[in-house]
Amino acid sequence: MSKTPNTLEIHRMKFIAEVPRWHYRHASTPTWRFYWNPLPGAWLKSGDKTIELLPETAVLIPPQTPFAAGADKPFSHFFVHFSIPLYCNPDKRQIWTLKSKDVILEEFQKELPHLSGQRMFWTAASIVQAALTRLPQDVFSECEPERENLFDKAVKFLDQDHAYSLSYAELAHLCGTSINTLQRQFVSATGLSIRKWQLNRKMEKAVQLLLHDGFSIKETADMLGFADRYHFSKAFKHYFGISPAQFVKSGGIPLP
Image 1: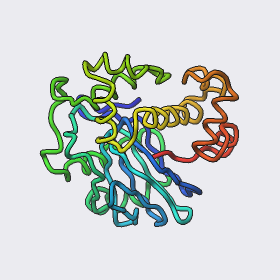
Image 2: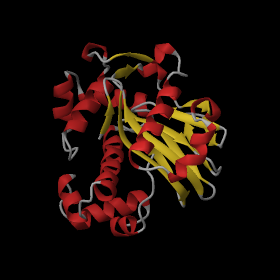
Image 3: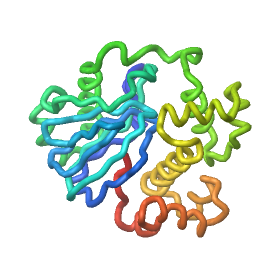
């Protein structure tokens, strides 16, 4: 991981010349996301709002923001996954649209397909920081545990359990509430039950382990708490429409 001191932690960044498919009904991420597509063809949907990912538009997505994604044709895609030491107020969680020219200098737009290593990090960091300054000030506050709502508290406990195997009763106990109250919090925040939210997060973690961390299918299945490779492969294919082996061989599909 790369860091700029006290401000920004970048987890992943990449320019993809052609994304062949991008269809997700329910996405929600543990980190901030920045997206910019120099070629059209893809869209995001959050609530009743649909956002076309056009060359003149960039987007910021706060952590735990539920959305769907799709594409009508192959498109090019630049993304940055990052964290900042600021708490995102729950009532401000939405997909924020920005003018790409305001956050990506023209020379950066031309250079992005060819950048790598430290230069890519510096460029990504400058773009993300410029984008964050465009958001309203009340989007952020300092990270303070007492400010967290039940949903945010539950997500922290779930993400600490890498196999996402906590029972509802265990999770409710850790959060100091009832199972029914916790379920209502998840549905209110994401539109998903705890079970569906856990599956989404598990599949996103699977992509990270397989594609970026270099673990085998069996190792990934074990780490995520599946009974064996067969059960993991079946769940993965049902979720993505492609087997883990095919996914790795093709270089993967960039997850929201």
